[in-house]
Length: 392
Image 1 (cartoon, rainbow, N blue to C red):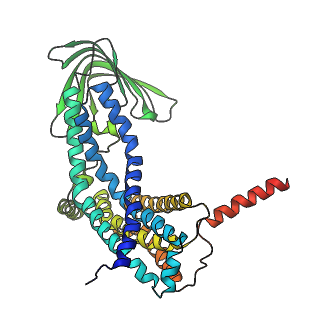
Image 2 (cartoon, rainbow, N blue to C red; image 1 turned 90 degrees about the vertical axis):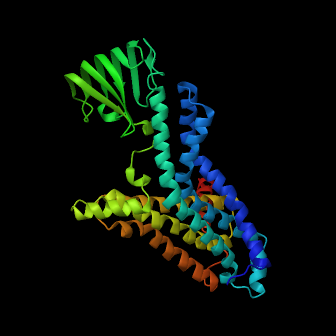
Image 3 (cartoon, one colour; image 1 turned 60 degrees about the horizontal axis):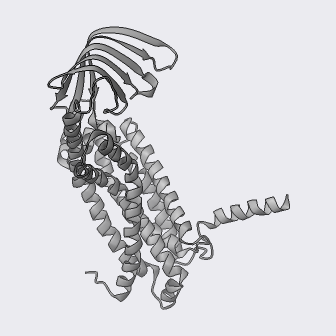
């Protein structure tokens, strides 16, 4: 059984502090975009601060699943970078301590982070997404008509501007209605109706404005041609999650057992649910990034950084961006059914596994050039540009 020693505790502490700092900063950076919309709901639609905190609590787990791998990379990179800058790692290796031994406490921390990330993916995020949609529905339903006022252009619903000439008690029957629907930028429309009714749909957790005796004036997807059509009854459906950019995506709300059941059922019917298969594969593959990023952070932390810790932070962002692009590419291939979901979602892990193992082996066997870091190419480019300007 692996037992922590003084060296392990020291390395563990050095990595843990920037890891928590990075986790807070990165998660907050992702939450800010949603937070602005939450504040708007509180100011314009009467949502209480307690309800805002509840919504925020349901949103954060989805971001933590992504920021945990990034935080372990940042923590390891900054922690080892600090020890490397103070020549502590050089002293340790001069005493015969191998890089494998120095990386051991980091990998223990990475395994712990991997367990947390997997728990987020399998248990917390589906629960949070389901509760977020339910909470948004109840908020919008309770304020659907309370937010509407007579003879005022109301913006209670995301992407919609609603004008109502008269509202009859108990605040559900409307008359003299004008609606501007800009939820789809390519197919904007204006709806005019004599009467309307707000109908909540408990089963699908949506709000429907049922309009009668009116017309729709809209533009086609080409943005040039227009159309006008009359209707006797027209249902305008609103998904509450659209207010926060939450996509109604059932697989993200399913547990592991439910996902496997849906996948097996759709396969038996000959109509594979590629979105569900992609979601299942993502639950297994994304947390693996914590282990790969930890190994990569150890290697890159040994390299000098001419720009200091800010350069290492930029390198961390660059690697995470590359991982995210590869993940989205694999996700697109998997959802299109072109590649098996597990193969497609494993693409970023395979690429980073090859890169991390190769770099780590070269550093551990002293085959790498320890005098130059990954940021040197950028500094060389900047200096070259400066030299050319001086020469001109």
